[in-house]
Structure formats: C-alpha cells, structure tokens
Amino acid sequence: MFNIEKYLEKFSKDVRDVELHKAKIIEIIQKHTQLLLLPKQIEIRDAVIHVNDSPIVKNKLFIFKNKILTEIAHSTPVKVIDIR
Image (cartoon, rainbow, N blue to C red; front, top):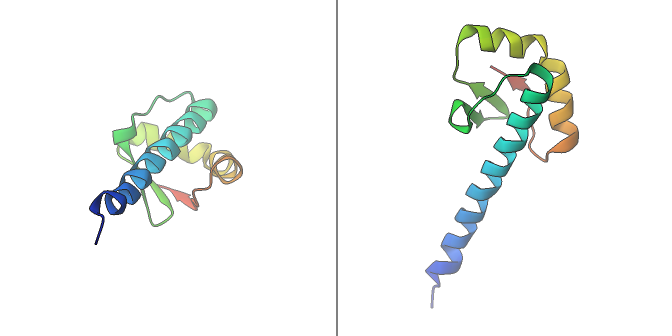
C-alpha cells in the first residue's frame, strides 16, 4: 500500500534544506555588504538569486557580487550563477 507519510516527508525535507541554504546565503551577503536581508526578500530560481528590495540595496549587492558568488560556491551546495 502507498504510504503518504513517507512521500510527503521528502517534500518537507526539501523545504527545510531550502530555508537553511537561504539562511547561509543571507549570512554571506551580510558578511560582505553589512546589509540585513530577510528570507522573504530572497528567492532562488534557475540558479539565480532574486532580491526584492530597493535599488540601493541591489547596487550594493552588485558591487560585491563576485565575492558573494565565490563564497556561496565554496560554502553551500546550491548552484548560483548570478544575483539580480
């Protein structure tokens, strides 16, 4: 018989992993830019981090983009190629 609990457990694990990766990415961004972002302001789609904030914040992220992307590549299993 099909066990729905085990099936749904896979999805809950994936959600927890995404939240942990977001927290690590926010920590890396804060380390390099001194900006405090909330998890709801960041979305990871198609290997791109989308930041929903003001243009000032996005400009500061663009300045430190290479350092942020390099550290994300070394410290998280998430593949990220760009920040927008």
